[in-house]
Amino acid sequence: MNLRHVLKETADGFRRAWGSCLLSILTIAFFLSLLGFIALVSANIDHFKQTLNDRLQLQVFISGTLDDQQIAALSQRISRISGVAKVSFVSRELAAEEFQKEFGRELFAALEENPLPSSFVVRLGITGEDEGRIKQIAARIEEEAGVDEVVYHFQTLFTLQRYARLAATTSWILLLFVTLGSLFVVSNNIRLVISARKQIISTMRLVGATPGFIRSPLILEGALQGAAGALLAGLALYFVDRLLAQLLPGLLHLPPESLIVLLLLGCFLGFLGSLLAIKRYL
Amino acid sequence: MVELQSVRVTYANGEGIDQITFSVAPGEMVFLVGPSGAGKSTVLKTIYMDKQPAEGHVVVGDYNSLFIRKSEVPFLRRKLGIVFQDFRLFADRDVFDNVAFTLEVIGARQKEIKRRVLRALADVGLSHKARKMPDELSGGEQQRVAIARAIVNEPLLLLADEPTGNLDPETAAGIMDVLLRINTRGTSILMATHNYDMVQRYRGRIIKINNGRLVA
Image 1 (cartoon, helix red, strand yellow):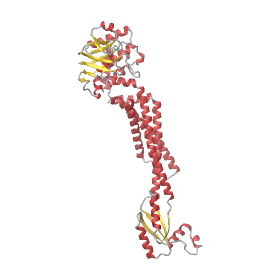
Image 2 (tube, chains in turn cyan, green):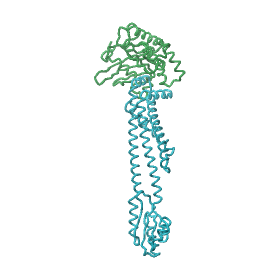
Image 3 (cartoon, one colour):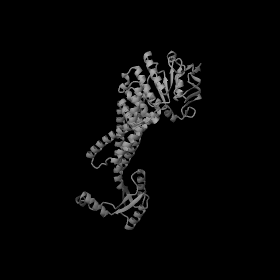
Image 4 (spheres, chains in turn blue, purple):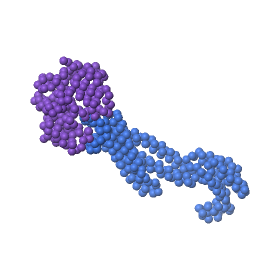
């Protein structure tokens, strides 16, 4: 394979159809930026979800009539429920202390007696993925004799779950569009190049050019378009990432390796797009 | 060296060639003469294996149309030089690069390409126009470039399909002189033409074709 020829013909292909070539690069850049942005949002949602998962616990208020033995037995029964990781007892006195720490002594002193019930803090051994399962565990605990009420504040987590699922679905659909869209624009551009060079390609064949000799510049052109689009997308994502970091400190950043993945994805899409055009039009 | 044996090629419209048998020996000059639509170009196409015979076979050097694989066709064509009536030069390359292209295809080194291209251009009398673009040349000069491109790789056989068809008689005579000079140096030439009067003035074997069949 003559490298000089491949590079010369590739440059010539860019020169001949520079308008559609630029359009291909910008389209790929737009699609990949969108994909990268969704990936960034998904990563942050996952991270936030993980933080909330670490705090996944139920508060189980128990009847004030239970003696120590009954409380220990209830604790045992709750521990045995599937999905429960750890049960900690919070006495009325401890609850009062916590209350005073949080809201101040004055408020508590105004009360004639400690109104807070004893409770268990139940940590769950499951993630917040399964909203139904958490509700099931809460309902199961509530069935135990001596349990007055089970309280949990997972609404944020459940809402986040829904957003995470939506983000995941959106990224898959987007990936499909990115793939199809990029393949379409690259193969269309290569089709134009093939069409403009029809006579030349026919003469190449007559002087004994192999299919590889004719195709390699076209394939390289497609891959370079994909790479150029990916580089632009990488640049755009870098600036978005910087901007978000300033606006919302504590957010996760795009790891540097994601840019390599983006570049490989761009090259692969460009390569595949030109291969499709070659298969169809050459 | 080149042999066609009972070759038949049929197109969808019913036209084509049938029972074509002849051979071209090393160093021979052969004129394939017949009116337009007689099947001359089809005969040439079977030799550079752009068309596969429905019957019979074609042998070019070590290649036989019965056994050749698709991937071998480019290598067969490297043993041939092909010249067309419409020149088929690359409009975006100068004369030197047009001729050099044949050698780039086979992966020749730059030094070798330069030496051989300059020699081929000298053979057709165009050394002084090496850096001209095709649209800066006359029809006769463009055809000389096409001939230089065809001979630069020292082919077994030069196929010329109506090489003088687009040229005035004087320019055509100049092209014929170039072809005969190349033939004198040992390159076999098979030239298809409709101009019977013209070829009679030159030495060489004449094969007549009409309605897709050879005639006496």
